[in-house]
Length: 310
Image 1 (cartoon, rainbow, N blue to C red):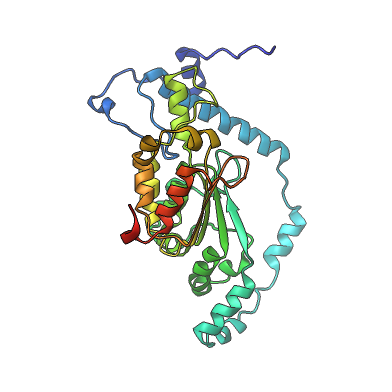
Image 2 (cartoon, rainbow, N blue to C red):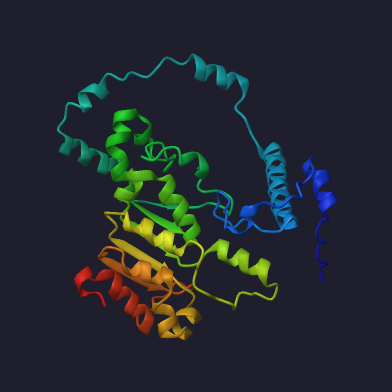
């Protein structure tokens, strides 16, 4: 059996990080604070330092991997690219003389149906969540590097970006990632996303439970708490949302008391989301569980018009 790697001491972490940890406490320590990836900031000095140390190690390993596997163009190819004559853009002004309806049809043909999901636990599809907060419109959000029509010029991006969101299905592994996406995608993204698939769990909640209880395991399923309400509030701003699929742990939704489920703050906020045309509730084995009483109730609440909700 492999030995568990011992946790580093505070002195060892200070040596690696290159600075002394401030051991003072502050009057706002009782308030909940979050990192930019929505993880809860620990209260103890040791836990804060350990988080910074783990992040430092991840970045160090990532840089080493990139240095080993990174490839660059030969210098001769770079010279060729730099000396190549610029492409002619004479056709672009003619394109914008077409009626908007015709341009939209052309954009639709140029934009394939696609999917969007986070690649890796520490990478929001290559986007910088904190950096994108400074772009509330979401115009510069890197939706996809494969959609070349978004990179032709500013006007073409402005006209085609809403259509690109409508033709993309977004897959999120937890509510934390959905919050980051909906904030970073800005008004343009929230106003045009039509299809979402989401696991109704929170990475921040799981990490918090691990910190508080070392006996917490995979069988200790609970509804998300920290960011569930904020997630539902952002879903309300998705004005064109038509298709919503939730993934929920099967034992959680089948064994949880009805009152506890229906009175959960996150679930109650979900029920206030505007009527959505199609709501699906699946378990983590990718099977529909809408025949379950609680799943059927939640589906009805979200799909029904406001005046018909209980």
